[in-house]
Image 1 (cartoon, helix red, strand yellow):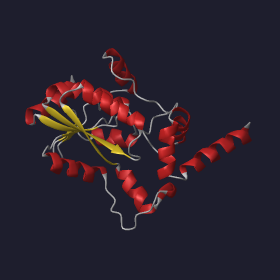
Image 2 (cartoon, rainbow, N blue to C red):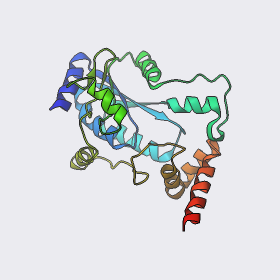
Image 3 (cartoon, helix red, strand yellow):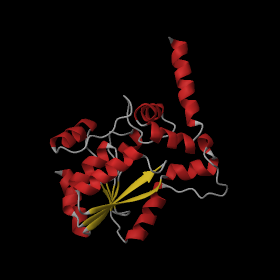
Image 4 (tube, rainbow, N blue to C red):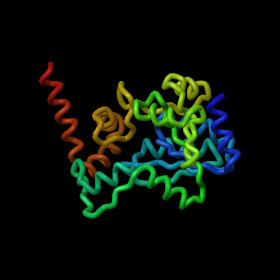
Length: 227
């Protein structure tokens, strides 16, 4: 009930909303299904680290076909702005590149769309920091001062997956056995998955972040040494 109360409160403030959507992640898939009936239009924001990955595009096309009242805005991930500034993992360094935070990106999207209310798929079970943050909002899962809301705050990972299955939504991608970090170019599970399952996308990752191959090399070398 708390989830629907949170969504309904925002819908009474605005007929449009912003949703930060990870494309392939379970929380985003479930949250879009939950909120889309309540708004005339939802601006889904996908933050990319490597643009144009085919499996990501597949998930974006799925959502756009399924829901007639959404559109996707693809913007550089805030971590990418730091990567470009620092030349991380061999990415072409851009001297003087301005770095952005998630809050900065949110403000840019608000300015572009004219929409103020933003949904996030954050859950208390994600991490201690998120638990502390979400607990600070009390029972509402809404930060009224910043117009940000978190309808999945009290959901567990199991509940999210059960909801996706019950509503016959597209299955999220799980890159490894642990918690997913999304399309993180320094995460060994993601890199191995891309190399083995999506070689063309892996080539795009390596082209932008050449030293990501070294992460795999060092991991596999260590695995051999432990045998």
